[in-house]
Length: 218
Image (tube, rainbow, N blue to C red; front, side):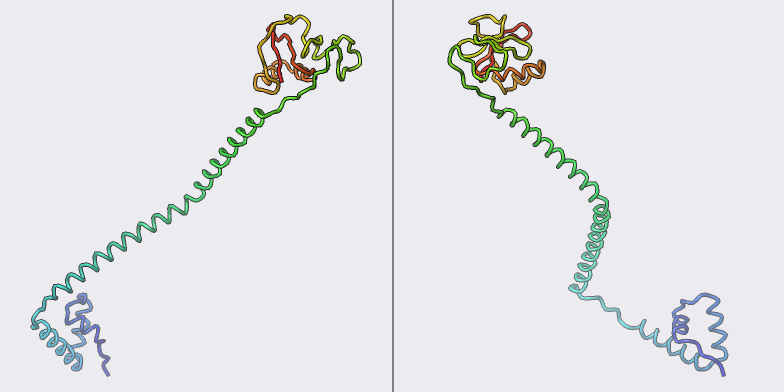
């Protein structure tokens, strides 16, 4: 009993789609198989009838629709590729973006903190003391003379009307005015830390700083 060729193989033989080696095998089989020869003949007649049919052109509407769909699909493919590339970049960008955001946030917080400290210093309320009546010294420590003489910050101060004057400071002269607790006062204390004790003296204080007369006010 002879095995028959598959219909797909015979169809490919009729359409001349087989390799030379496959063609020889099919022809060797056809030489001994009547049934396969008849099937090849029918396939040949069917192909001839198909070739004899009139070719019909597609309607213009169908051609336009096909062209539109081709363009649409091509656009979708380009959009899909762009989205894929964007997603690949986004997969790397979050870490960089987060680090940059943290740096910016830290910088802003540090700036606001520095501004707050500066404003708090500017708003510092200087200590105020009630002036004692003339000839009387309030809160005088042990060793203060009855005439109102005090040793503060290594300097000798004498009680005068409305405040204190350091020995050697020009009497009756107005020195450079400096507000206790202000920026200028902080600069003086930074250069001469011992001056911080001067705030113990009530009222205005006239003293010498580097040979210059300075009047501290409250």
